[in-house]
Image (cartoon, rainbow, N blue to C red; front, side):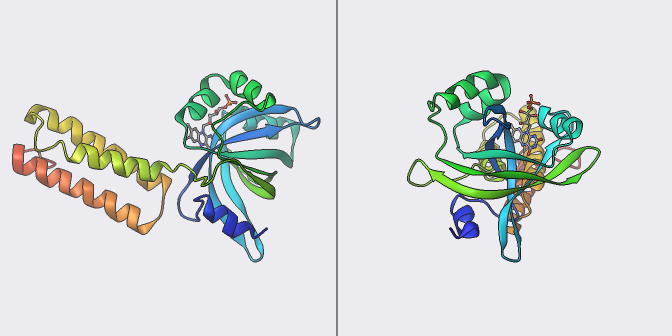
Length: 218
Ligand SMILES: Cc1cc2nc3c(=O)[nH]c(=O)nc-3n(C[C@H](O)[C@H](O)[C@H](O)COP(=O)(O)O)c2cc1C
């Protein structure tokens, strides 16, 4: 298996987080937890895997710290299904039961591997996933990324600026600002940053031309 090529095929890259549902297994292969988690591609010489962070406050952070775990077996589910993300936050038992019965239909592929603890910080733990194998369920599995979603949302709201009443323009600019921050957090890809900066600048410009005020941002 050419691991890097496989991971790139799913949409993982070094500069943008690919959002996944990650399933964690205990010693007896029982599922101990599921959680939405973002990963970037990690390449070091011949080695290729995924890297991400487990944040303080999560069950997995506590598990690693209190049990002193160095590694944990996991399966990274590639999906764009918002239901999978929703239930993995609000009803984990439901997702775990579906997984046990092999009845979770949302995952387009599973990357099976071991999550290795690389660096323990006060606020997060840096982890690296070493791949064992991949299980492809549908034809073209692609990982979800927040930066792309935020750019599209920013465009949708930009196109509303010519029509909304001027007293609603401030709300739109606040949204655009929010999407700008989302893209900056989720990706370092130059073209993504260029697009979101441009959308934000154009939104401010258009809002100011239409509804200009003494407010320097309008
Ligand atoms: C799209 C998405 C991506 C997330 N990425 C991460 C992540 O990379 N690391 C992390 O620790 N939490 C991440 N979270 C938050 C955790 O999924 C959430 O805190 C977790 O489900 C809590 O699980 P617990 O109730 O078992 O502690 C993400 C949440 C979402 C919705």
